[in-house]
Image (cartoon, rainbow, N blue to C red):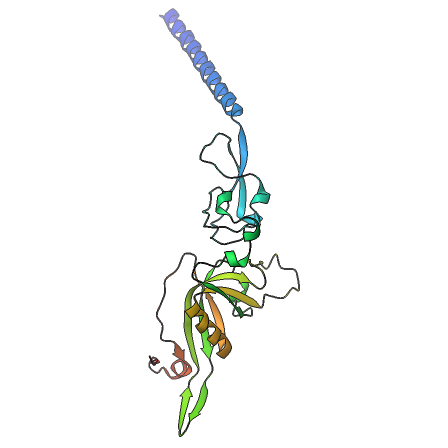
Length: 253
């Protein structure tokens, strides 16, 4: 009996060694096959890149992919991507395909303006510019404040109270200052002044309202969350409502 147990033990050891050798050779074969696959570098979007935005280096990430991957059409040449305008949105993790970028002479403001819109520039300061946080491609609502005024028409005297009203919603930022992209606080040199203008994409009708409000009142830009294109109807607010809690202001049609 003892001899049989020893034979079984020896057989188990031999089988274990054989299994280990088979596993070793299998893994080694896989490693050789993997080593034989050629890889190439492709730049992908590190973050969601909106349409009509100038691509910066920190928006990209280089990844290694098999050269024979038929679905990969990106490029590993960073110089072909950085500084170019996107024709359409590039999602996070997607390869940056050259066909989705404007090339050469098309890196100008006129190619950034959406169809049916016009570029209108208004003056801003740090307060109007949402504390230096807006960037090219963002959506904002435009809020105007008009000072109180008195106007005499013959024997009548018309009083216009101080009024704050949202005049435009979902307006795209085309550029900041004289640049088509907004420099961050880290990029801006120490002591360099904030941009003094913002360029917005508006329809002709919106352009009339925007220019009149800019000439007659004080403007503020309200930054919207990403992908939020909702609109809200507001009656506006006058100073008396804030002070005395009176009813909402009625607008003449």
